[in-house]
View 1 (cartoon, rainbow, N blue to C red):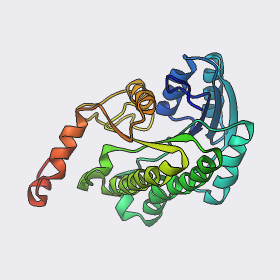
View 2: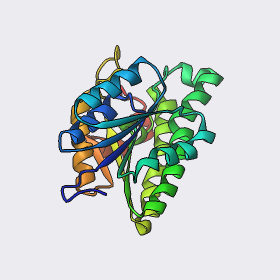
View 3: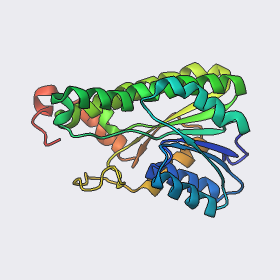
View 4: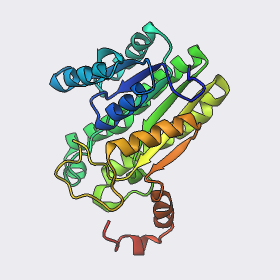
Length: 251
């Protein structure tokens, strides 16, 4: 369970090679003993991530994870919990895709929806069952401001994030009576491997800033945080812009 400072003894990273996921794990590892279950595709990036976290003193176990293999998700969660309860789980996988291909190419559109929406719903349901068994646990879902109001420039991605965002907000309500807690994190543009080569948007941040917001949000039992916090005001304003005007904005 979380200690008095809101810090976990165990952490499951779903999408464990994510820059943000690794930054969160590193932040928690600084505070004391930590068991990390790193679920990701096997390969050099996962090996490097295990080495990095082990060097920080964490006890790391690597598991094979594929976002679109939904049939394997319940067993994966059970295996991750076989070494003890899961205090904090970070759902950190997703794809950006090519904005124009994502609505003109059938296979690309379906894959984006499977990774960004179906996959998170699948693991979320399996995690909810684990939280009910434990009677405690925090699930952190890495969402995006892109899902707050879907824009023409990346509407397939934004729609997938909007759906998963809504699912996890609802999951938080459902798990309240079972001792569980869900935190939805909505970053703006984050400088990571996934966004490399893309033009940065205003109010962009790095993985460490998102990690700090995650750690603080878990400790404070928040349900929703924006990174940076100023995006909450910005997106609240954009949400109420009339559609004829909204489509004229350079978004």
